[in-house]
Image (spheres, rainbow, N blue to C red):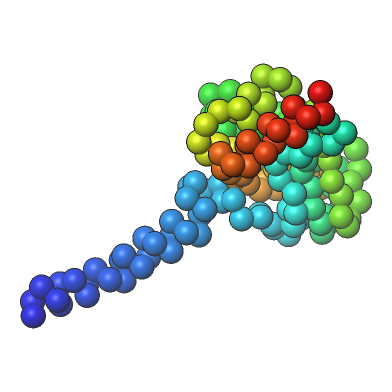
Amino acid sequence: MKAILTFFKFVPLLFLLIYLACSTGGGGRYSTRPSNNAMLDLKMAGFQIDSGKFIYSFGGDFRKPASRFTVIDVTNTDNPQIVIDIVKPVPTGIQFFTAPVSVENSKWVRTGGVTRMDFDVVVTDTSGNKSVLQQGTSYSEASKRTLSMILDSTK
């Protein structure tokens, strides 16, 4: 009986740990769930293929006008890289921005296993206030094979 009571003392802690692991998408503070805040409801975060080119694609529903939109790849914390930097007025509403992916930054597509990437999406409002969304992305081995096949077929 004492063992059962001891077990049930830890059940709430167990559920809390499971909830925290699930709610973060398994990647810490950079969840793979779409991020949002008072300035931006992120709808697209990651990569796509457009006209045979591999590109970064980020954007969503801008809830307030912005003066700058910057995406920083922070996967390698020792070497963060700005991948998109839009320095012009961004109106409210649905807006998407793209940028080419270098050959060096696309090698992960041809590696085995799951690839996880983290991005800081920085939105600067018209008063100069910055808001940072932390967005994770995850690509399964199967999705990377599909991306590789599409890239190979467009050469």
